[in-house]
Image (tube, rainbow, N blue to C red; front, side, top):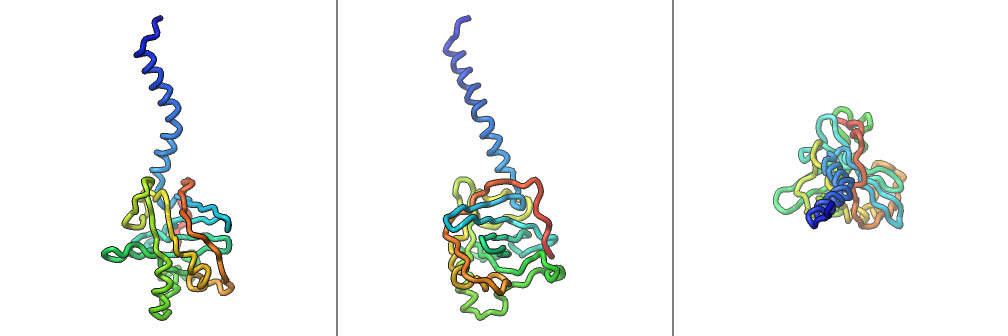
Amino acid sequence: MRYSARNHRVAGLALAAIVAAPWLVGVAQAAACPAERAVYAMKTAEGDFAAAFVPARSYASVASDLYFRLTTTQRDYWFRFAVSNGYSGITLIPVADPYAASAKMDGPEELLEDEPDDYVHDILRTLRFYPLDADLNMLADPPNRGDPAPAFVMVPEVGLTLWYEPSAITQDLAATRDPMPRGVFRRTACLDAPPPEAFP
C-alpha cells in the first residue's frame, strides 16, 4: 500500500491526539474542580504551607459562603472574606475556628472586632487576598461554593502579621513568630468531597 503524504498527516494527528489526551483530561479535571474541594500548596525553605476554602453550613460572610483556611508550620488560621466597593479588592477578616462549638449560633468571633481602628487598619493592610486564574488574570471576587477554584492564590503580605503580630489573627495565646515568606499557593489537587461544613 502506498504511504501518501495524507496518510502521514493523519498518522501524525492521531499520535498528537494520543499524546495530548492525558494532559487534556488533567486540564478538564482541574478546571472542573469547585473551590470547596480544591487543595492549595506552597513549598518553601521555611516549610510547607497549605490553604483551602471551607464551606459554611449557611453563610460565612456577605462576600462568600466559604471560609479561607491558611495552614502554616505552626497552626491553622481562619478568615472570612470582605469585598470593598471600587478599587479596594478582597480582604481577609481573621476569625476564630468556625468548627468550634462557640461558633454554632452566631458564627466565629471576629478577632479584630474590639481592637483600636489604627491597629485594625495596620493588620488588614497585610491581609489582601489575590485569586488568579490559570492565565494569571486577577479575579475580582472570592469564590462561592460550586464556583471554579482559582488556579492560584496569593496573600503576599500576611507574613508581616505572622512575624510581628500573630496573636492578632489567632486565639492561640501561645502564638509567637510564625515565619512565612511571600509566595504563590498553587492548586495541586481536587478532593473527592469537600471538607465538613463549618458553623454557622
